[in-house]
Length: 363
Image (tube, rainbow, N blue to C red; front, side, top):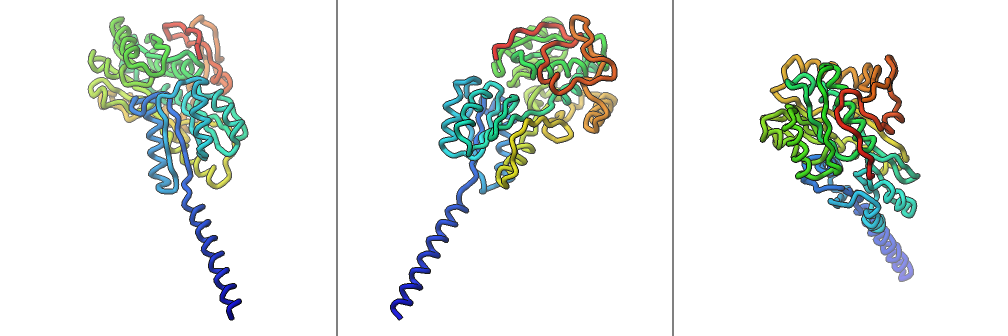
């Protein structure tokens, strides 16, 4: 009888240990980290990514744990940040700036158990994907609005750094302008920085002083929108809906919906179906869109924009379909042809209705 009791006690202990271990495993939260180039309050690029982080917190609730690190240098200096997150056993690390690419790749090779997601780059590895969105699509639509709304036919554009991404999106905006207003020109001023509110304001002021009656941007802060508001001209924001910074000036903005994509990635990693890829989603995927148009945009213009939006979503129209000429008068895209993704990803020339040159990139 004593031996039976000992045996039963042993079984109970084993069951309790297994139950404890199972509970521990179950209690472990899925860890997701975000690395940002700017502050979460920039109202633009980083703000949009952080909205995505907050979105997945709501979707997954207590099953995940998120963290973020802001103001990280957009260079190899960031490598220690990514190494630290991998050592802390984060399941996924979202690296949200182009300049993080080489640092992320190096760390990914050393830490195979962490999935690294790099935004706006092109390098991949077995545990590293590249991802971006076709924000040139809503940028083209924003250009249509600018082309209709300008009175001076001079549209200002505050651009950050001269990489293919920025050139491509600027060109898409200018092509939208040209579609409805062949006489209008898009004047580009470079800040040589993604986030520099003071320089962005100076750039916007110089464009307004030279006659621009609409200020568009591709930089990260709301300074261009605020400057347009102060000077009484229209503005088109970027990255997020910036209307609160320009209640009288704001017309719209090409915006990101990162949460939709982040939810998919996390689910795929959780269920083991994730695979390395180079993702480039568009309006049809919900990752990019055009912010609701201001009441200052006429109804007929809104209707035209909606027609082109639906045509792009359905694949019946492409912003980069020919004919398209560059600034030197060279035919870059023949009539009936469309630039390939590879040509878009390596773009290094401006279309013919842009005023301004492309400086040599430091990135």
